[in-house]
Image: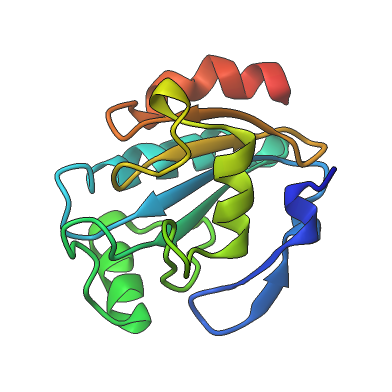
Length: 159
């Protein structure tokens, strides 16, 4: 059975990273967008990161333009937006697809391991969150309406 450590992704700056670099950490993996009603969740994600990063927690943000074309900018524009509006300090990756034939392999794995509402694998919208334990196993999936701050107890249990 595979874990998220079997995958790699490209950071916003073009550097390819093996997700095995995050081995032993609790991860919150989120598909993000800059022009979405849920975009203010970047602040909550940054707050979680600041609170728990010293204890072995990471937020991994994957911009995606598949929902309402709400992430139409270039990778540099996305980074500038995040820096200017939310001053995020957690890793921001290059824009990816999360659904369909071109979905990033990591997202194919995440969706298979933690299905959504009524067993659907398809991600419904921006800011869907996947919680991953220290062993790289997907523990839970949270929809867009779940605010980052409401995940504190679930994160604490895994740390």
